[in-house]
Length: 114
Image (tube, rainbow, N blue to C red; front, side, top):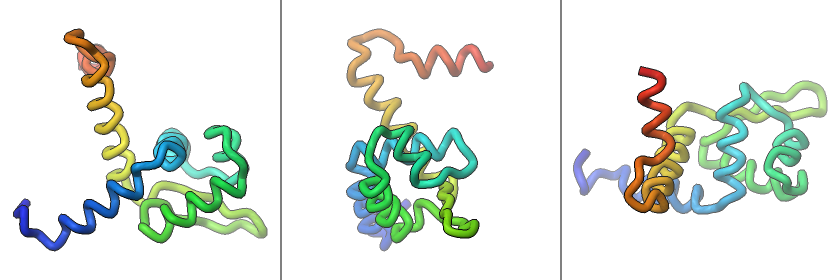
């Protein structure tokens, strides 16, 4: 990828959007579930439905999540696998940062799957 690419600024916006613990937790919750309602996500991330709804609106505007409506209920899902991968990679990097010279847990999991 060219450092002068038009996508660099957009990538910075994505990182800025994901620089919020609640949004990261929402993505983690959606990563392990096909789709969830606002109330279910709120329960998982331990935030009010109103707060979660505001975060989901931002994620939806950025096309990180998409929705499906069923009557009055709206269900959210990840729009694609990339936000999930970004969050996973950031968490893996955090594990390296605190591993203090030891091998992080995600490397042990990779070996077990091989």
